[in-house]
Length: 200
Ligand SMILES: CC(C)(COP(=O)(O)OP(=O)(O)OC[C@H]1O[C@@H](n2cnc3c(N)ncnc32)[C@H](O)[C@@H]1O)[C@@H](O)C(=O)NCCC(=O)NCCS
Ligand SMILES: Nc1ncnc2c1ncn2[C@@H]1O[C@H](COP(=O)(O)OP(=O)(O)OP(=O)(O)O)[C@@H](O)[C@H]1O
Figure 1 (cartoon, protein in one colour):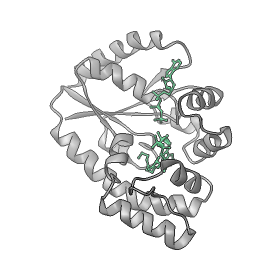
Figure 2: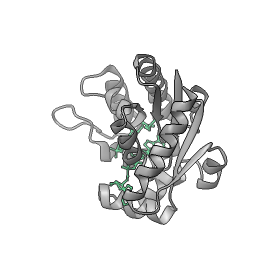
Figure 3: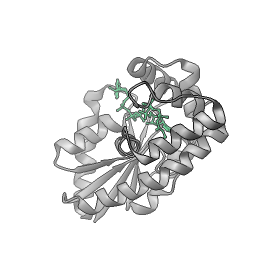
Figure 4: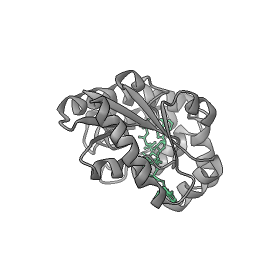
């Protein structure tokens, strides 16, 4: 199975790009989607995480119906690196297991593995090539703010918790520059698609 890893910092355009590969019939395994599934309401992992933040931070991250209040968890983990490391240690093995499961089940000529922390977490070892979606930090801030209505300082903290743009680009086999209009993406995706089909 040929696996193409796709990564990029917050708001770089990974989902926008993988949607185009999906339109070409390529299966996409998305770590952000899986990260939501492993802490679905009522899951044992969500209970473990909620208990930890209640006991150690006196913080209730669940609403009255037992749903995760994502903004509360986001604020604490990007303000406190020990909280983030603890959460990562709980979630990343579960995310990785589900990624492996979904990669095995994929039937397209190749499969894309999309993960913001692909390189940080060594998920690139599962991939034949790494495609980086690249934009300058100022655009990451602007587009993420437009999408999520989150404070600029919060997005800056998330960027600081991820690999630097330079380091990520150094590790790329292929790069999509997404600083232009979205209409520029389809021809780039088609060119890479032909290259990846040739590998498979
Ligand atoms: C903290 C949470 C609840 C915030 O949820 P929210 O809906 O606000 O954001 P969302 O999940 O859409 O993530 C947005 C972006 O934040 C960045 N991000 C998320 N978690 C992390 C992390 N642990 N380290 C660095 N960046 C991260 C990624 O670029 C991601 O695409 C959520 O991000 C989460 O559960 N994070 C821990 C799991 C994780 O590491 N996910 C990354 C994929 S492996
Ligand atoms: N070329 C572009 N021009 C303008 N807006 C764009 C462009 N590409 C993506 N966007 C918008 O920027 C935002 C971030 O893009 P997207 O959600 O695809 O990024 P992502 O890398 O998946 O983000 P995250 O890591 O935060 O999940 C979205 O609202 C998207 O519609």
